[in-house]
Length: 125
Image (tube, rainbow, N blue to C red):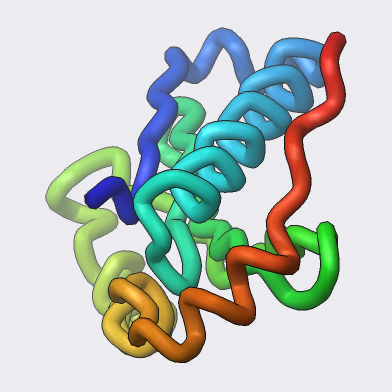
């Protein structure tokens, strides 16, 4: 079962908004397809550009409505002297892990019947 996707880019890509939007859209499509085919309740996506990682949760909310919401943004420290910066962000890490454990799991058989009627095919490009 697929419950998450990661996309890693160099820091030099941080100014290329088109590339960032394209990769985020691609992660959203991967997450939607994982929900449709592997039947998790939700899927976690993590685009990482340079030392910044953003956590998104994609979930099927209603008939054909897949919601991709930002959970947290983490900036990894650039050196050992900045390691205390990461300590400050631990609350966000715990929040992401808690949401992941609660939502990124296989749905029960009863919920699966309801979710199956809500799924929609992806539009062609």
